[in-house]
Length: 338
Ligand code: PEP
Ligand code: MN
Image (cartoon, rainbow, N blue to C red; front, side, top):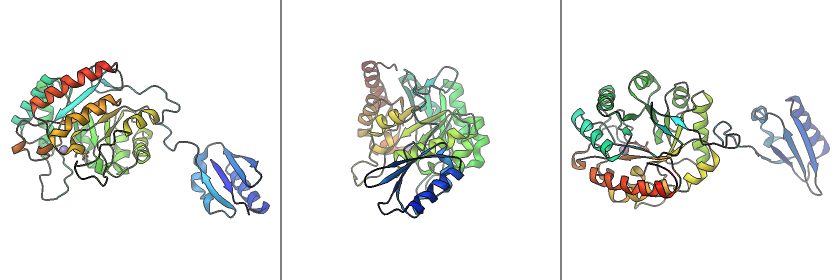
């Protein structure tokens, strides 16, 4: 941390700041310039969090030089974390992981048929929400535990792992029982109690970026989970709100290289929610993998006309099949496998 003093700061004001720093058993280092004085602080800067140095007389500004997300930062952890998802699947290594399925679990028959279909095309994880965060309270809210049971049945039949969204801390025991990966949705990215709770679980967590959150907010949310002891955190870029209205959200493709450089956690792209329309989905998915993402999570439905949720953006099974073929070529071109 650097504390820049005002040009007008008096010796008394500077001495008071130095005394406060020493009181916290930190070491101040004073650099006197021609115009201004800067005090560097050495030691565990977290101790200074309780001291609002900005309000001290004589202080012009305070500059944080360390990343606030310490555990998920790549600074001291150069290798990308390889996270074990199931017995035979990891994410963050050479292999690209494809998670696919409907937005929401609608009924058992449709889920099983979709699960077989996405598996045949090469997906290794089945997606599907049983608890849905809907904008309107009058829209379908999900099948709840019944939906989780159908997902488990689909896993049993196909061998696909299951990723599904959890919205309420009270449901953790259900997710421990039925899910392989717990999804925290965009709307709950800053639900800190929820983050702390899944941080105590051993299940891998797929954390989606909030639609109005910066990459720093996103990494701080990941830090919440990680610092509770759960190191199996996967980040998911799913588009942010901008002034653009021709797509549902703006996929921040730039976040992929930024996240890859800032954190050791694996990154996946959700091309479905930013696209909003199925005709845009494949391009976004391909861009995500080309940009360095470790996987995708994509919505697929065999009868979008009847889809209860997000039908317009669901890929038809044959479109998903084509996308997989294209992704394999991209994976090969960038030295990854799929
Ligand atoms: C979803 O995956 O269906 C979903 C609701 O996503 P998000 O939280 O990104 O809106
Ligand atoms: Mn959806």
